[in-house]
Length: 133
Image (cartoon, rainbow, N blue to C red; front, side, top):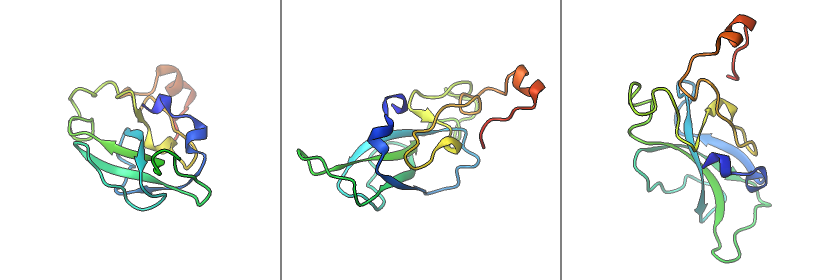
């Protein structure tokens, strides 16, 4: 879950590669996967589709036990809001979801009203405040 990812676990990220435009996605799921390399497109073994992944810098060290690297992978499932706007996550988001506009290398990102499926609050509308884009 994204709430369990800590800044130190992603401190060696150098870049995020998006496999498709994320401008129209309200949220993406993120996880830390054990992968054999620092860079390159990882294999994907979930339902749905991978929409992005992190690249690690040369200072990232592999696990002593497994020889693998922990890298973030961003993905969506077939029942997520982008495919089923009125489905299960029409007015909420999965626990591991974050607004892709809040993601950067070494920044875990966060949920926004947009990612949670709600319109901006009345107070935000009255003050003219918009969420990060």
